[in-house]
Every structure is written in structure tokens, then in C-alpha cells.
Image (cartoon, rainbow, N blue to C red):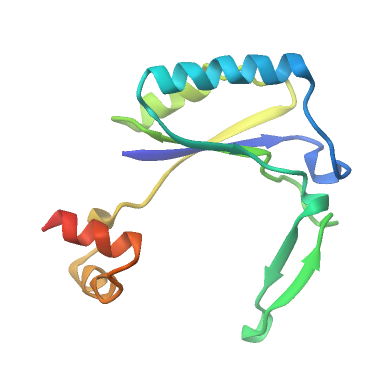
Length: 142
């Protein structure tokens, strides 16, 4: 089972461009990330620049509209993520609980859809796109 752990730091929605964590926080997080890797559960991870450096694309009426950050209506934003391969939601939560997060940070744990979660009609559609990850998953399922 794959799970994403999403870091949600309070106040990051209004962080200025170039905002970075301090060296001690980075060191603590690197040690944690190393433990995920040594345990063989880490698939990917990245920290994200603040929303003030990003953009959002919305599709009102099917037409794309781009809004540059920061986003006035944002209450919670992502600061980074980890992708884990674990045996259960409980194991993912256990790993999230070990994170050296500060008082102003929350980690949301969300399971990633696998092709095996979908019915056969979705497998048929995905198989029409041989270069996609979804189609490769369908092929692997046999």
C-alpha cells in the first residue's frame, strides 16, 4: 500500500518567497528521512517552496484561469510530502508520528489509489494509454 504523508505547516500560506527552514530543522528532518530510507519504506519526498512562489489553475466553466500566489483564501497549504510503501494505514501513521515536526506542523496521511482499487471498466480505459503509469499497473495485474 502506498501512502502520502503531507506536511502542512501553519503560517506557510503567507510565507514570503525564499523562506527556508533553519539548519537544525533540516538536520532533524534529514535524519528522519534517512530512517525512512533505511527501513525501505520511502519511495519519494520533496519540500515545496512557499505558495507565494506558486500558481493555481482553476477551471470555472471549463476555462483555465491562472492565479499567482500567494493565495488570499488559503487556510492550509502543503510544505512538502513523503511517499511511502507500507503494509497498512497504521504503519503509515506510525511513521508520521515519528517525524520531528514542530508545534505548528501537521502531517496528513492519505492512501494512494492503486489500479486494483478500480473496476474493470477503468482498467480497460487505462489500458488504452500504454505510456501511462496506470496502464502499466493494469498490465502488471494481468
